[in-house]
Length: 109
Image (spheres, helix red, strand yellow):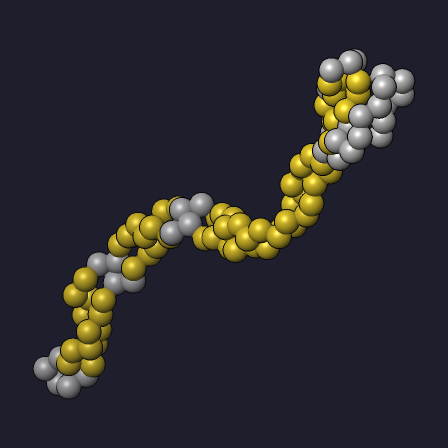
């Protein structure tokens, strides 16, 4: 048969260095204790004492997600096709290979 011959693909590829952003810890809500507020006051004879002006309480604080940038090396698959060869064409009863014409005997490469 005449036509174009292409060698079968050969599994190949290459390594590529990529930078990726990776989540280290997801966003979370923390419950934090806020201490009560005291002020120092003085009694009628000048002795100091602590007076509470605000009670302690819990508050919820959103801690954002933490990310890290990492450099990784990954394999990128690809295919290599070998050289393409074309078979000689039959022209007017003779084989033509692009260089010369033979009389039908042999391929005239």
